[in-house]
Image (cartoon, rainbow, N blue to C red):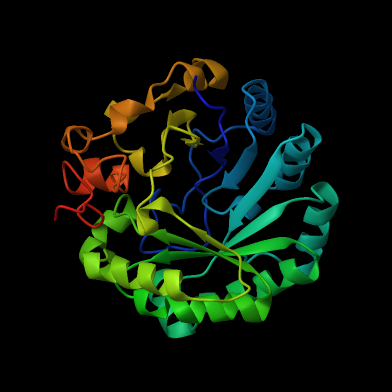
Length: 313
């Protein structure tokens, strides 16, 4: 039986005040396809109907939308667990207070690409480190459950232990993901794409590290089964539903569009096995000691299998 949708991302805007090198959606300008407040509420109703567990509001930068408080409040009122991903640069004490009133149980994910300005700002631009750190601290002071979002790339992978220490010092959780070169990230693939040894380095450090920090480690780091299309999906700014946001430029992997069908219909009629590469499906190691790694890497980068995880490489 098809499992319920556990974690659904909703890209409510592509507008952004940063111009990050690795951005998978080329964020910057507001999309002409962006949903209105009313349309977003209708989508939230569809997610509730489909028995979704968590709604992750992403961008772009969600705090650039004037209706962000209304959107979060509505999702909360409908019983969804609510999460918002942000660069935190716009999170003044006043903004944090308004967010807390709108959605008291909101969880916050703050993107931070390194423990020091020199690393973070190579990805996100000069002056962004202090802005993000200040906003992050404002979220903490306002009483939010905060997770630092750390995307591993060629430039920052050696700093994973420092990121754990930073999270411990700040009292946050730490999420660790792997850079996938799509969107603007594709233009910077040679600069940012990690090698197999880099992923192994991060995995070894995470496995050996002992601390009180709550760690959330993506499957593409630790080698577990990818959740794309199985328990996770992303709703793009134009309503397209994809197994994960990295499939946004690949129509052959689209699940549907919520402007044309309900999310419930799209979700429960979708067969995620179509994402499993043939070479993995026929491999004797699959589903025993290997779980195919990142499906976006398999199809979009290596054309067959995730060579950063595959045990036969």
